[in-house]
Image (cartoon, rainbow, N blue to C red; front, side, top):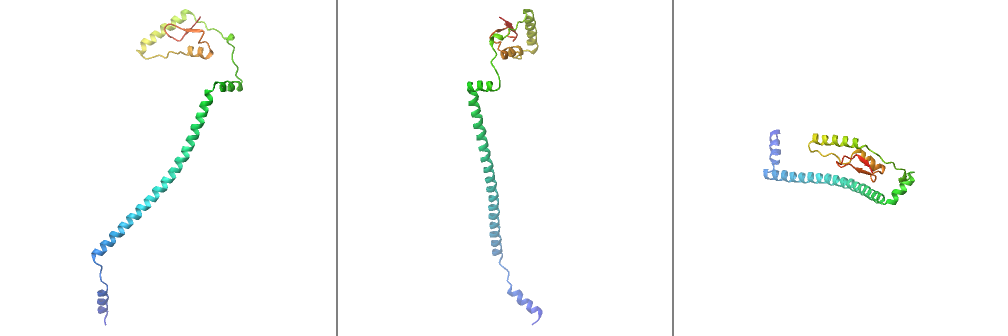
Length: 161
């Protein structure tokens, strides 16, 4: 038997698979690979969600602690006696009202400021000017608000009683 006859025998014994079987096998392998990639993607997504859940839970605990701390601080500050204790602990003392001084402003100076304020109001064409000037705020801080009367034009300049 020659080489050619042997080749023909091997060629006849190795039969090709029908195309239908090959297509079905490739389709099945493709579907299995798609499921495998989907499972892998879901595994990574679940891992990421688990890490995110842990991070968010720790952030929730931190925020709850901050909220509780702020609530307790607000409750503490709402108690007037605690403010007095804090002031005394800080070395603050109450200033006697007998030592308060009255601020006196000349009528001519008050009129001068009223005129300037009226001109300023005309220039700003309707823009609101703050009702409390620095002088009124200072008088309020120093405790003079009960002893001072605002001018008629609400300039904030205080007149002595």
